[in-house]
Amino acid sequence: LLLLCSSVSPLGDEGKALMTMKASFRNVANVLLDWNDVPNSDLCSWRGVFCDNTSLSVVSLNLSSLNLGGEISPAIGDLRNLQSIDFQGNKLTGQIPDEIGDCVSLVHLDLSENSLYGDIPFSISKLKQLEYLNLKNNQLTGPIPSTLTQIPNLKTLDLTRNQLTGEIPRLIYWNEVLQFLGLRGNLLTGTLSPDICQLSGLWYFDVRGNNLTGKIPDSIGNCTSFEILDVSYNQITGEIPYNIGFLQVATLSLQGNKLTGKIPEVIGLMQALAVLDLSDNDLVGPIPPILGNLSYTGKLYLHGNKLTGPIPPELGNMSKLSYLQLHDNQLAGTIPAELGKLEQLFELNLANNQLEGPIPHNISSCTALNQFNVHGNQLSGSIPSSFRNLESLTYLNLSKNNFKGRIPNELGRIINLDTLDLSDNNFSGTVPASIGDLEHLLTLNLSRNHLCGPLPAEFGNLRSIQTMDMSFNNLSGSIPAEMGQLQNIMSLILNNNNLNGEIPQQLSNCFSLSTLNVSYNNLTGLIPPIRNFSRFPPDSFIGNPLLCGNWVGSICGPPVTK
Amino acid sequence: VVSQNKRQNGPGSSPPTCRSKCGNCSPCKPVHVPIQPGLSIPLEYYPEAWRCKCGNKLFMP
Image (cartoon, rainbow over all chains, first blue to last red):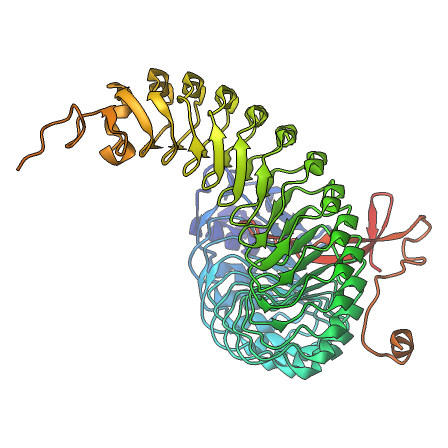
């Protein structure tokens, strides 16, 4: 009888289930070639199919990253002995079939990085052996089934980046086994329950980017197993509770909420912090000097609040600090020289505060510094010539301050600069030719200063430059013909200077140039009548009384009609 | 006052000591490791956690 059956169909129930699944997938032509209902076909040798050595039943299906489309067939429920399903990184659509709840031996279920939609089936709660459930990066909707709490051994629950709605079921927190809870990037509402600290085995708690409201519960300090606590980009209100100081976390991300009140001093005792992000809230008051105790912290983000008072010199004791972002606050006083002790500092952003006084020379000791931004303060003095030591700088922004003096030649030695913005200050003297050495420069903005003398011909060596703004200075002389070598320049802004002579024909070789403004100078002669110059509007040229173009009012343009 | 608080289970935390956390391997030092949420879009930074490191091997603190 057995022989008879097998001659009718060589495959057993599991083989038939797999063939039904194959029929439901798309783009199978190349990848599931060996899934075949022919005599002597051994399904245990099929691609992605793994069988138990003795029972020969299918225990594992690994079809990850095969570009599979189509849907997951309900026939998957016939594979009763499956312990692991990995369909991660395909293009699967449709719903997760209810029948998946029949795979009662499942330990590992990964359907992440697909286009699955619909609800998470309640039947998943029948998978009592399940330890790992990853449905990240799909288009799942509806609520998180509260029945997920009936899976006794669930260690990882990752539902990141779906469109799940409703509240996080409170019962989920009463799980001593759960280690990883990823709910980032959904549409979840409700509050942070005080029960979250019942997750006594959890180390990763991430609800970033949902619509959670309410306060951080006072009981938060009981979450002592948490290593990462990310509640950023929600609508959390109220003050940061004192009890936060009892956490043992390495990452505390509270940014992008509506937190009010002061930064609690107790945070300065949380020496296990590697990352502290309180940015983009409504925090007020001073930066507690005790934060300088955080000598193991690498990243400190306090930007986008309403913080007042000085930058505490104690921050110079944060010897592991690589990112310090205090921009967009109301900080006053001077930049403390002690910041020069931060040998690992990579990015320093103090923009848009009310800082005054000079940039301390000591900042030049931060030789790892890659980005330095003090835009929009009331800083004064000149650029320390020791800045040439900051050889790793790629971004230097001193714009919108009260800096004066000459632009030091030495800036041309900071060879990795891609942005140099000194605009809107009181810099005077000539433009150093050495700026032309900055071959990686993409953006140069020296506008709105009191610079005089000619545009250096060496600017023609700025072969990467895309944007050059020298407007609103007292530059004189002619536009160097060498500027025609700038093959990547898109925007050349030279208006409101005293440039004279003719517009060099060579500028028409700058094929990328889409914005040109030479208005309000003393240029003469003809606008080059060739190539891209025909597309620049009259506004690019007006205010040069002796410049000849074809716009109304130009000395050689069409007559003004009355 | 601070250290006394700590002894009485007050607020505050410290990096792991990593004492005998790397098996037989030494030296065993605490390090920050980025935990990638595995998203396709770049983030401003990854969350970080402490692990104990010996050579190029990581151990739980």
